[in-house]
Image: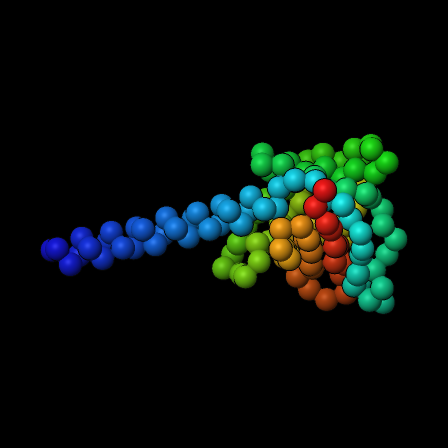
Amino acid sequence: MKTVLITLLISLIGALSCEDIDIALYESFYGKWKLYDVSGGFTGRGHDINFDYLELEKENNYRFIKNDRILEFVKVIIANDNEKEPLINFIPDKNSEVFMGDSEKYAVLEGSDTLNLNSPCCDRFNYHFVKE
């Protein structure tokens, strides 16, 4: 019985520490990100930058901003589906323009100031940001 309790306690501590890591990881994504490059797509050259900033809020809202004007303000879902990088799914308004070509991206942080939103599949666009 003592062994079972010790095993449960160790499992619980391990589970709690994983949650803390995930929370800390997600915390890094929140804030204002300046778009500096778009890569990928069919030609591999990306496309012209069609917004200046992406803002991600802790309330799971996001904004696309261009020339200090909010282009879109809607919800985002962050999931991890046992992948290395969290999958961010942008839920645009049905009347919205398409700012990223598709709605789901893998979020890859490089340090604390660079965010890459990479497409999960081929011939789609990747977006590269620096934190403001």
